[in-house]
Length: 371
Image 1 (cartoon, helix red, strand yellow):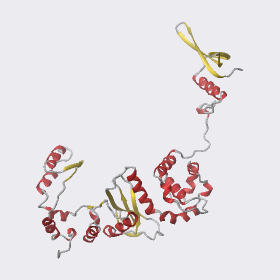
Image 2: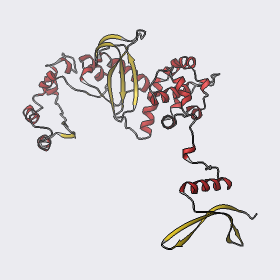
Image 3: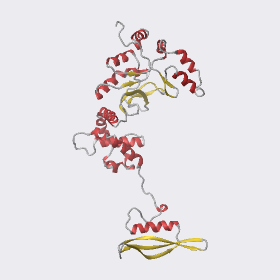
Image 4: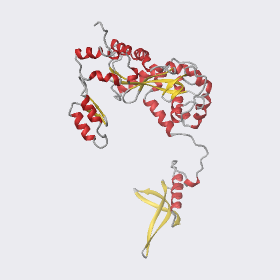
């Protein structure tokens, strides 16, 4: 037989006002540069499902391995494994080059620390669960093929042996994220947000859990510390004992960040729960620029700088109905619109103004009294 391929050929015939389509299986080939067709079998008129069947069958005969002669309702799923969420997690892990953080000298480990960290991270993002339960979820995903670690090699004992090693790389991981984000122009690193939250503990074996006040009232909890860029990239995190006061964490935080990153050049932004005289003096001594808020009873000391009559007048306006009037009055007095219901204005205090304010409140006392 001459070199060619099978095709599903069709022809149209007009009968009265109706048009009929007839199908044939034919052998298509070229001879002397001209196309020829030998009819193998006349099929007559076909239903849509039959056309699909013959097209798939002919594609298989022609050696096209991407199709097979089967209809969708004839398929039966024997096993199902999670692909898309796992593949997305794997993509972002590789995009951020996180495995490079866990590189260690060659050893005899069957599974590297980096692979354990990668599996734990992706699975717990896809389906939040305990570390030990990830061993049951792992075979249900496509991660064994993506990462190259057999399910039999990923077990509970290996996970818990590696936890201390993973913790060792925490500071290096935060530094890597920060530097790569700046390199890729995801952030400029000019500003860092710092805050604390709490997580309730229901068990009895967590040595860091303490009874005390948290966001949900009085519960047994731990304190969660997090430093992020304005874009949301985490650069430092820590779990602290429950009932740790916000203001008691600044000295530890600055020490930890300087240990990992060196001198802090970014502006540190935190809420007024962190504000204390000692903290402000510490940050001034370290020459770390700060953005924070004042307590309500401290704002009154800025009466020479802030037009409180204007503020109180604007506060009485309805935000939904008189938004344009609010914007007009505030921007007309030097305030800058940031977003809905948020305006700001910078005040450059003179030394005399600073001294006056510092003498009125300890929390604003940036210099010793005897200066």
